[in-house]
Image 1: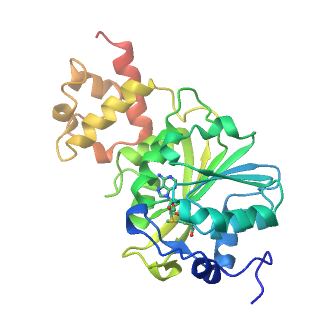
Image 2: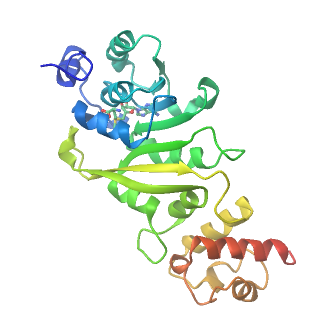
Length: 282
Ligand code: SAM
């Protein structure tokens, strides 16, 4: 059977290299190269970009990224069993694919890439949210990446794009949306993967903002949001009591009803509250 790149189909790659999926590594592989090319296209024009891919596995998405014209791909894979299959892809695309056998949580990838940089990954579910939070909270903003195009469990994707008033709205939505624009660009049924996971998945495309959407001190905003959502059923005048003195007054000054709950409050209003607290007496 011919493929987009002349390399063997992924089922053959998996059989040749004996890549039985391991649950503890979050391995649910995409074997349809048309689908992986479609995911790669969601990241935008890759031709002038370096791409960071976490968890290439047998290389389905990696091949999609290269076929769609990525200037260079740096792929970080923890499972040594996948390296021979990935080496074959490197040979087919000379000088364009570098594979690092490492835990993505231990690697400072920014140092190894040349801007503009896009991150594209079918993430291992066990480290996906942790990596997302790290990419969104670097020491300095803007971060090393222009965009993140990431596969998540659908439920996590919905939490990333959620708006105030919805059940999925919370810390993750606020963290992402303060510094970036996020939208779900694809949803995938369990059968798209081998083996099929129990849940549906979704691809989220996140584009960085050059500066946060509303001014606010990052640490203070984080404290307010954490306190508000740690006790999300409580009214804000109670859940935020420990954050600063005279909280009822400060909530009102920010245009927020003290009896409201965190899930009703927009990002704009949380940022306004952070500014009121920062300006007020400690
Ligand atoms: N990208 C491939 C695809 O779409 O078919 C594989 C996706 S699979 C969901 C996740 C991949 O991440 C696996 O290959 C797994 O070995 C790898 N992985 C798991 N934890 C990792 C970590 N901490 N660092 C790097 N790779 C990891």
